[in-house]
Length: 494
Image (cartoon, rainbow, N blue to C red; front, side, top):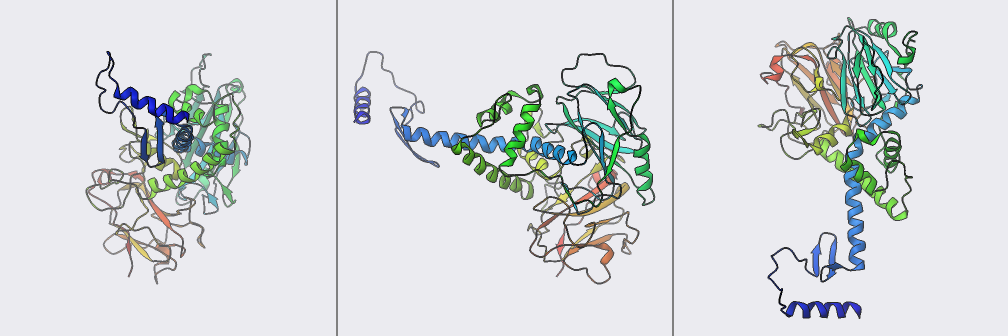
């Protein structure tokens, strides 16, 4: 009865004209009934009914949860990395090194099997830390929000000669001694990664260089520095990939509780707070909110995969004016901005869902230095790869690299090396048995069985399982950047 009375009163008020009555501009008032994508919304002269309020609150929480999930992917990716590294040893001491290279038993986002990986987690809550980087390596520091902080090694301040890097905590105001490259991340947690290189196809020289030179210690112990503890992860089944289900939120909350808010921004932290994740407060969603967060995690994971595997538009492609399927690893640059001060949201979601390690060296034009990473999840006809079919990739002669190139196949589900009978699902210019065509080009085959006589140029795939591939160019040369050389499209072998 009250609703009827209010409606009648509203109609009467609209029918009457008062001394101060003016014409209301179009679009100011909201109709009492609206048909929307979330159902029929009802109001009494602009005041939403209780039923409509419940509907829009649910919609608001769902939309905020989805956006929070997509924005949190970099943070949770890092949290998953830290948790995985802790299984090998404590922070500020342990270097997880793949002395015999990564193989498919390591579930790690788009890892390579051509260089010697070194993963270290640093934490400056108890004060500044020093890390002595070995010579002849290539790597970076990424903070807990997964932003690039600084490079080390060949593209870093030490220029490949090795050097001492001093990591200061957020807000540090103490003395800063001379003799160090100073790094000031916005978070306490800091992932340090670098790659050492093979020498004449052997890992031993690169590994020995790390053992001889790598040190990790508090600045307070600079007069008695200790070597890092190296743990060899080669051949050990291990997971370095974050979860994408409800536990995603629990990892995010852990990081928010640990890190200073100054490392992020008020809008992002406000979005997290709106779904119950806020520094200094318990994360304790009720049954309704837990259901919303579970749903948002499922939708978010699928959204991230869609953005990564078959994104809209041509801007994310190396050759946007053609039908080529070769994709950029970064669009919007390593800082993921469509223009200065404007975030490229899709670019960030794609990258952090599928990769680890952010550095300008992977994106900037650095002729003869760094690396480039064209990749594709689609064949020449724009279709996803079918593990039951055979495909061919032709690399024209004179692949423009100073160092080497490699092609590695990854599992769409794990975004990690495809686990088959092959220890390493790859073909590389470092392979001593690589077959080169008479014209200098190289044909690489993908399929469940190798074409006769092409076993050394073949990567095994699995019927019923999707895959994608990444072409790595180490020390890329000018023909890559000016696009006078380009890889062939991947075609089905009839």
